[in-house]
Image 1 (cartoon, rainbow, N blue to C red):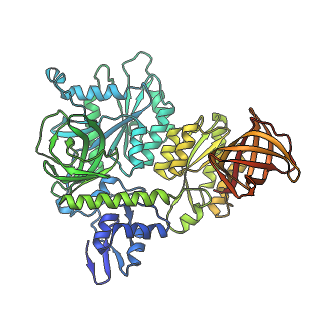
Image 2 (image 1 turned 120 degrees about the vertical axis):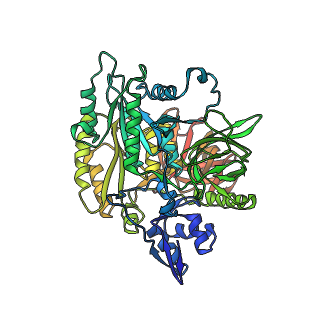
Length: 592
């Protein structure tokens, strides 16, 4: 990157902290500028060229896209893989091929863990296996003189949790499908998570040794999900294996190397040291133990590392076998000691020059996280058109859940028609069943909206959606759902009215007042009661009144609100059937 006068050369993507250094401004100032433009970001997040150009323009710079030699046939589509973002500022002449990093996804009981164990045992001698006591969440195997790194954390929940934190630890996803069982709900979910992350996907067709295995049926199911096997003229590598019999493992490893070669996975071993936190735990005797995956540069003992809001000088580095090592290059998983606190899985780590710099970075990140949590912007249908116009969104990402397959098929058909317009519509995942935590997690990581048809959202799913700012829409009539989405795509959708409970109270006694009729003597048990708000009065499980809270008094004074722990008198418009023990819920209706 270079600047010339007020002109500033920038790459296709840049980390906010690096952008701040480039224009000699505080990262906090840049984050605030981004927020005023409607972009929620953290200090360690990457922004694209267009976004960076708007921000630096406010400081008087004219951004120019950095000239980079394009490789023939290499076209980036959609989300730029994390490792490409990490090496965006590196000189191409210093980039070298690094080992691919693999994660394994699939349906429960289809053999994900068994396959990882089979791969591990091909590398580890029988006498040595018992000596490996340190589990660090990742390991490496060698094939044809080349290393392959496996993340030993199977499951799309962990995979997406890392994406939601801004990380993308895996270069390739291996989808495990049992040949005797076929594509199952979690298989579909795993495919959706891999596609949303824009990670190359290959299939390990497991349990082919079983008598009732039916590989052709599974291949047909995969083809229906747009994973057409290469032997059928498609682009998805499908490799038959048996984790139990340790068959096909060599073919799988060779296939991984082929996919890696076609994606040109590179890093600069001598460049800026940066990578991803895989996991961390607190050991009573050793302190914080963290598993780090180096993705660029070379990590060395004694380096000062910042990982999320933790930092420290590395006292020791060990490899996946627990053997002490002095340095670790790109794609190497290591366990480290010396961090001051517990980083989270998915946090990006980097090496800095001094502990003072590390403390400053952590302080900036902590402040930025507080600011971001206070101004977290919800991705909603109402805001879709404006976000697209402002360049903050390229289209509408949807996750569809329906009661039965018979409902799902026509919904998909109608939505696909809507997606043919100017604003793209992308269905990341479609399945039957209630809206779960996994659906909300995928939506949070992909900035998607969850659509439910004749289903409900689980309690945990609702809580997570509220926390992550995920918009959940529930419908019972297909045309109303398609009408809302069509209006959103055209920018005509009116704000959604939602109820927000502000307080609850218990009726202690009922008494008559000449001015108000019957009054409920209440104690506020949660939140607050507000005069003019809406209320519901329950007797047991039955709602006996719904309407306005017309009068609210504390002692002898009229008040606007009463908070938790205080007693008050409440009057309802044209309603007198009040008894001690009744429960009152106070709520307001506001725009979503």
